[in-house]
Length: 93
Image (cartoon, rainbow, N blue to C red):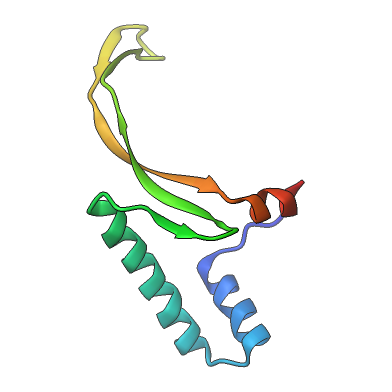
């Protein structure tokens, strides 16, 4: 199983759509920027069939340092979440 990085993704999309690599890269960067901006503001971004990007709040909790076995306090934080859509789930099955 191979990992696909941004460059490989740009190449594949450019080949499939006959668009210039620069144009495809600009679109991907704009998509990343817009999704980041929207979820930073607390909004959900839904790409029907693919999935939903949103923000989730994690409560503070106690953890254990694996090296020293000492108990540590892990602070509450806001984290990004992605939930796969039905079409993506079906394609992976």
